[in-house]
Picture 1 (spheres, one colour):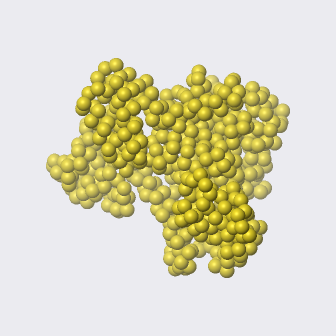
Picture 2: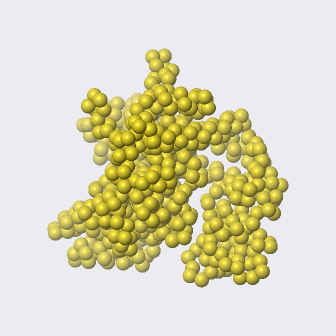
Picture 3: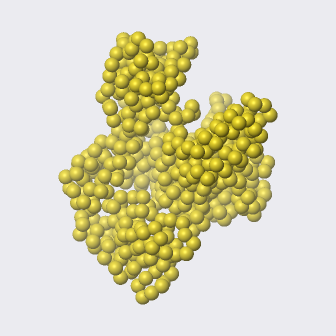
Length: 595
């Protein structure tokens, strides 16, 4: 995208109107407008926008820039993306995009087709919800309190019990590559290794479109109407689209396209676990609600929320799985200095059922009385490890220690620790000292605890690397790690993994550890090396899986880095660097799609 086009957009854009989409502004002079700064918390407006000169400036936090800078900061996007966004908002036609390679052009074309095919599928499902075959689906939705208005707003549909109809309807408009890449169809592998004819993945299910932030459908969640098939086999209640070039489940929050304006306006978001919870609460009047769609909450989703607010109220399902998911979400949000509260609804109900049975006013009352996340965690610790005995108190305390250490604010850590000691009835000087020490230290990365898949990944590789030289698991691990030194970045066991991968297995494995912390880490990994249940073939498969996760972790990190570097190259008009980075981006994106 040329500098001339960017200048044209900047000259024609009304910065007051565009900033006004994000910030409530009031006129304070002939050309000046003022409002509350979106980049820091304040009670009196120190954020100023000058219409004549086309800039913004905050007298509180000193953020400044032009219309592109503002959109980049608010949307967390690159400079070229900001130029396109402002052009679209201003009604300026975008120039024909130039691609650095035929492969990049082909991939861009495929992405456009995938957007179109998902829109066509959404319309197809919407139409079938009105068909005679969908009577049961309409009855189910009515029983769940879903109105015609809700169906239209969220574009709820029905996938008919037909393998071929949707394929035949879409076939005249989309090529086979796009249809196979969409995730809307399945096929069976043939004897010669080729893929057979496509058939509809979603059948006899109610469909809920998943949209990106711009409101474009990129995937579906589909709920089955039956519990078993005609052969008596259990049917999964929910089926989700697979990951595609458009959709990565850890990077999408259901309803963000509709909720983001209200998230900014009310400066908090309600986070729920499922689409129906989200839909019920939204249609009842609480618009600033998002759903994690049953997936694990991720760092990417935390960053998405932080663009709009730093205050979150968590209301996951009350069962053990929901409580566990709430703990993990709290951990990620706390590390990023969010203000977090938790709702626990009476009767063990989920938000959808609670709103239907008790009404929105009762739910809003529960929302207003949401407890601090520290209180939720202390209650959780007491439920899991009743502090009636010394052992129970120790286990409850150990459950809480990582959460205390995550808190960025020292005063809050002290308060959490003191409250935990009091509620757990901890009088022991030693246990109180543990809590006090946890409050005194801010551990920047406490993800290497036992439930963290990354640390388990490292332990698998460590176990493999201390096996005899001719063992297949060791050869596989050493070979791939030696070829990819970039994979070590950020690993707790980086130094010892590197030492073991580049040298023979020592007679005493602990001799490979360069320091005491590494020896402790290796010793912990080796505790599981003699498990009878772990066959040799099993370890080899675990190593392959761990290496794949390590590669995926690196590619995702590099993808984020490249986006930032491309934005910087655009700002510097460094064409050579831009060409190099664009080529690398195509390669990284291609590799990521293989996972």
